[in-house]
Length: 162
Image (spheres, rainbow, N blue to C red):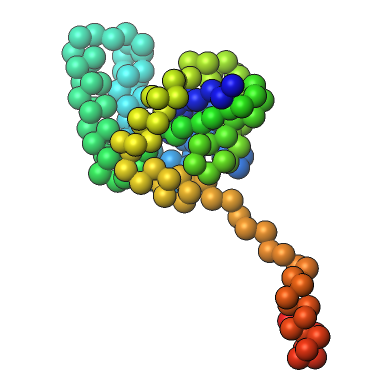
């Protein structure tokens, strides 16, 4: 049975190609990265870390709304959708890139969503597939062996470098 997950781009313990999602955000969208760092500082910094006053709660709410608008304006998904077919194998939905969770495997349990919720998010997120293809692109391996076509052309032309 497939399971679907909605994982925030700010997740530090989820990695694709050995790079955390948060570092991928940092490398590709530094303004969003700094904005998210500001959210953490706003929520957990200050003189009484972890104490949520009504004023702070309102400030965080406004800050998050502005951040959401920034994600939309930049065309960046705030979350990635992941799919698992077994407990060990979790992949990003569009690219199939393997997601590794370092440390706490139970993190995914809190991120699990229904298939319909995952598809709704994909539908409403503009250019999700294009963006994640760019973010999680794997390096293409160069093939050193000649294809059968290249060998035939080389034999006909007498050119051994083809």
